[in-house]
Length: 401
Image 1 (cartoon, rainbow, N blue to C red):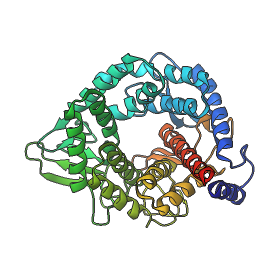
Image 2: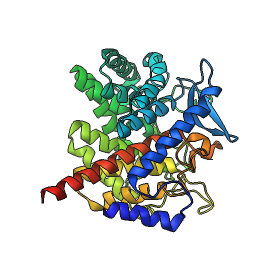
Image 3: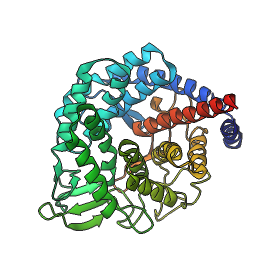
Image 4: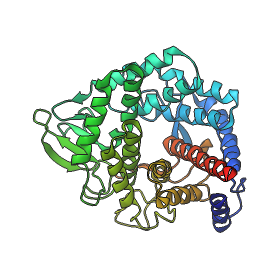
């Protein structure tokens, strides 16, 4: 109840000109209407290859192919709508945006196979009894494993291209998010090598990616023959030593997930340390959506990144379960409460059918700045599901008193 009151207060403070009341169930209903609108807008634009909505480009919906790193998120959004509503039409729609990704199980060109396959088929296997989906995910994990170098102790993020050629063996903090696919495969098959790769990658990342305050670098470059750290850089942030917002979000989410999957206290300790750093960021405890980089040079005249806020909210809801630290819960709730205000939560029939406004893909490359992004919506819906779970648990506890 306290959480719902907080949301209502935020709605009053930020304006009342949207179609929802602030009740979390009303937010779900609104999101459902917006996704219905999105499907109608997307269908006429699709052709054989590009079918997945990623963002708005010049106010027009940008569709991408299955090989794009974001291709799995829209299907994941539809699966979560099915999980939130129980309506079979959402399962049908989700499958339509999941099955075309099947060929990506063999795509070893980068680390993003985890994003593509686990955010889509990972939901499908929870909701549909089809052994083929299991085999697809297992093959996806095998494919991801081929990018692992035991000398380095990490999965390589990018192959060499004009933008990354100056690195010998780049590993980015984003890669932590793809370890969930490996952990699932280890449990599903009993093949411990999947777990061993995931654990070693997380341990190597913990040793090399983080500063003394538990903020993190974006890119660590390794010598593939010795495992030596060669460079600590950024590709997305304002500077090598700055705090790219979504990178910090991937970090707290990744280590929270790895603790869930392994029960290893070292990963819980990392998640706590990263979360405690995040709570020192100006306004974070109060639910202020962060700028794209915590140290961007022109704050407050810098774009926000709602996707980072959504990822952090989702991670902190879960981290609260393992720590009972109310500061994490309050921050998760406050960030979500801000995201559902009209400033960030789009009106029905606007924003190309995307749920959230004001995300930033890559500011240094002037790419997807201050636009909606499908992965912002994904972690927003995930945060909604976790917030509902918390409320249900609270109500259950009260009923037993």
